[in-house]
Length: 233
Figure 1 (cartoon, rainbow, N blue to C red):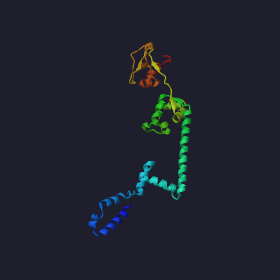
Figure 2: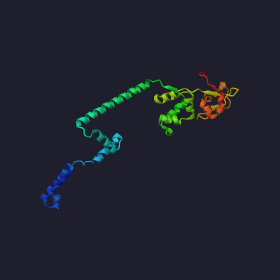
Figure 3: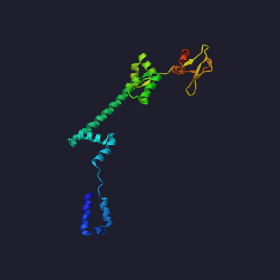
Figure 4: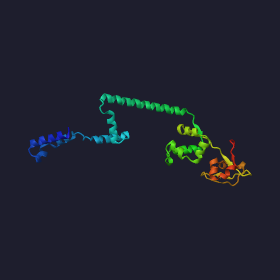
């Protein structure tokens, strides 16, 4: 029952009653309630319909309407059904190709790169500092990364690491020793490099072992005194 029909029904009963003020006494309350319960839900406008659907497709209502009308206007129901079937089939094929691509990428041997290069790639892909693309990463890279890539002839390694993933090479560790073979630097629990009290090499601990970067960041003049830590130490 729609609104117009209900109004006609009330008008008919009013004419039978002959007096609008007397209408509520002529039409029983239960009958009015019954008629009201049969009223159709109010219809939404066409604009409201597009606005309701649009968020499901991550589009504006205007764009969704235009895209749907451009794609299906003038088509029969059977043609629309066929197009929908093609879209679903194509979507399934795309998902399959994506899965195959991911499986193939898993079989590719990943290149090994230094930790500072891995840090830069991670920073770019996490969009830290506003760098998002490979182009941006190449143009904004720190001097240290640029030197490794260009002077070291590692352009291909950088590209493969960016596209296919990478493994981080184990960094070499060093003692910084005086001519008397006593430690001159150490690193504390907070990762800060400090001047050492001069521990002999035989008594040196793991906290006396530093990376090349840690040594050079503290003071490049200490680098000539670096001695590589042997694997069995």
